[in-house]
Length: 326
Image (tube, rainbow, N blue to C red; front, side, top):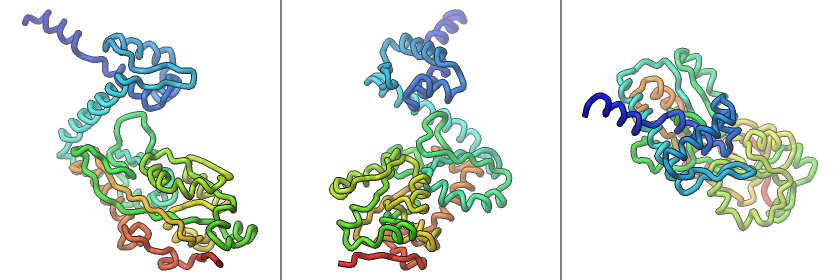
């Protein structure tokens, strides 16, 4: 094959990676405008590049609807390939730079907003003092736009065998309220009374947490929720300030024993969580440093609320525990 034929073949077979990035942004944000905002470009540019990609592939990837976009069957398949290509590109970078053992540079971590706000943030100052050369980017777990994170705290074990995953612990959920709320509305005498008080609900954006909601459908059907949000920190701050009762992780008892009360009415649930590494990133010094720090602050030996077996809040702090009176 001569040089001209080679050039023609390359032009025919090499994708424009920008088109794939735009498609990934559209698929993960659910709209053209969302993709444009995430990528810092104009919406007409996104629409034009999507049409180009669909024309090249000879298939419709998205259904354009008034309330956003929906992936077609071909689009779902294409998204799987794009994610695989992203992982491969990141693996290449990680493995080529695998000899980099220095604890300096950028590290991206994805975690739920609740864990980020109430657990990771309080340990962050010490990490930054000890590791001044690491620039840590802590993003919400559902931040779908952009490359895959170096590490993520996930509530669903990854099926990708190439992604190293380590168990971090278990979060145990019980009903919590503020002292102010109980003083105002009184102590519920039974589980029935408890469920008829003002309840708050977290609308889960994380599939793993949504699974335990499904296991509580029977109880859930009896509750008339007065307030719903998909942001954990909003829910927990509403509890703290007397807004109502909600299922919350027991580690909050250790953080706010003077503000909150635990309602021990045999309504409990637990959710396991894991630390997942981007394939190859464990050999990069800065990523390993962040991973070791995460394992340390979630160590169940010193943090009994993260043990796999349930540890009652009354066993590890002086929080008030309210039980049925009947």
